[in-house]
Length: 99
Image 1 (spheres, rainbow, N blue to C red):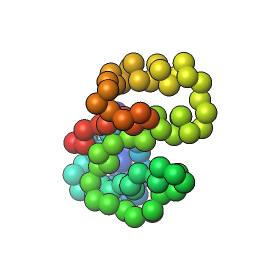
Image 2 (cartoon, one colour):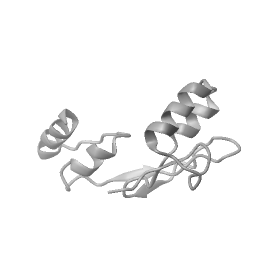
Image 3 (cartoon, rainbow, N blue to C red):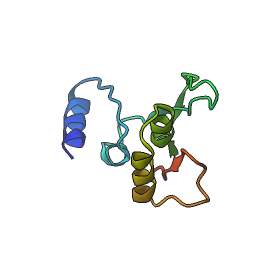
Image 4 (cartoon, rainbow, N blue to C red):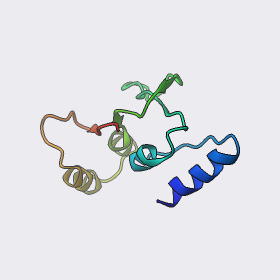
């Protein structure tokens, strides 16, 4: 992807700090980049603890954020279908494997 090429270019020349929700970018970018993520928001308040953790986030909270923001049920259902969610995944949570 373009993002990986840009990050590799910047990382070879300068200090580069970037953020992405794209797990493919996190997996493909040069290994010299340290990976980090912020934990999940509190279920009741939606607030993050703002603690930076090493590695790539093991889960995605995108679906939970759509639900919390009041997106239409049709969109939520389409996301769940495309993600292949089943009963083993808690409502509003898409589990993604970290790389």
